[in-house]
Length: 298
Image (cartoon, rainbow, N blue to C red):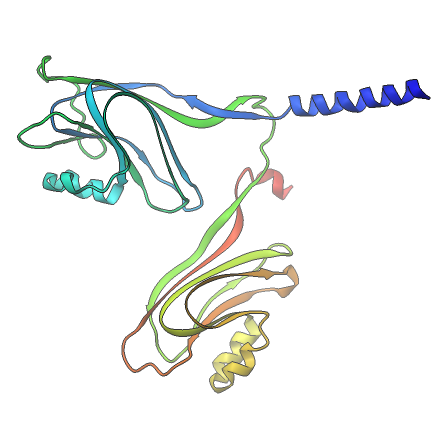
């Protein structure tokens, strides 16, 4: 019996080892490097990152320069403005700014959003006027005086699989915006949808900013029809909603939906009389599969 227990223990240990050996492993993987030349006062956009709303931005670059440079990340909108108006270069708001380096393993992280970012390398030597190159402006690779030229080499990295890469990836889920709107508040209620849950316990997130107290609720389509027909009975109708907030002006809350609920709508209505122009902003999000979703559907 003791031998059998040892054999079983060895068997299950081997299964655990094999399972762990067959897992994908990930790490930062170097991509092809790029080299270019800049001169004193040059600002070069060397990389652009365009997220899809649910993605965080993780900037990873190796940068080597013959002369000292500064490295930072700016919003692409601000960079595009500076490309056409070089006097705005000195006003750029940098994140993760590192100044006066000739060699750096550079990194900078941002939360998930739709904001595109540009990595900017700036030659720190003095010049009479700033020059813009790269990312919507041409790179200057040749033609600079050898004495003044600053040779810069950039090696980008991406997060990728390094072993057992043939194995399928598990599905990835993230908050995805379904609707975002700014509007002028009126006595009538606003309705968004319908939104139909695909599975039980689907999550919906509602963010509201308003200049006057609002009632916000998730209701069935039949309840929304009741509201249209009986606006004066709104309080009674909305009391039947299982996910609602009263008197909010700045709030984010989550609702859990069931597949049996069917199509649902998000409704907003003001709680006080509207006497002058006021505005509200709403964002409706849900958890969705954003990568490796084929396996999830099968």
